[in-house]
Amino acid sequence: MEITIKYTDAARACVAVNKATWEMYMQKSLYMVYVGPGIGFLLLAFGIYDFNGYFSIGNTKRNFHFFFWVGLFLFVTYSLHLIRVLKAKKIFFKSSEESVLRHSNGTNEILIKIDDEFLFYQSSHLTQKMSWSLITRYAFYKNFIFIYTGDSTLVSMFIDRTIITENDYADLITLLKKHEVKYG
Image (cartoon, rainbow, N blue to C red; front, top):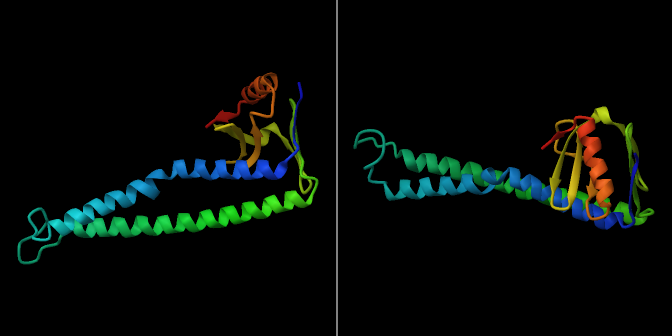
């Protein structure tokens, strides 16, 4: 069984997959980006409200203002993390834009062939042939199937489910299960 997938507009496919990759990353770090600063802000606000020390640790002469300091620490730490994430987003999409420009200057096609032995990827700038032993996991997000090598979050191959037929999709899932590739 061989599955052949051809993207005729590689630039558009790269933009879509990079956007989906960023969204998946943000879903995984939702706590660090939104919940952490929120908790820090609430503790900070409660600490400011409680500045008289009714709920603080220590005696009345040397009050520690526990909620204020913990809230301030969490708010600043998570806010700095949010700034780092926003900078990473800017860098990620800048490199994504460079990738799109590279595809635009070439043939602007991507060819993927998948069979029982190998996964083959070819674009105007890269030809890659991987054995199934390199594939560690796969994941679904929106209309994409992401196939990974190693434990990193870098995608080795992506497949747009709207481009392949239902039979090819079923064959792909069968191959992933046959080669004991983990989902998730």
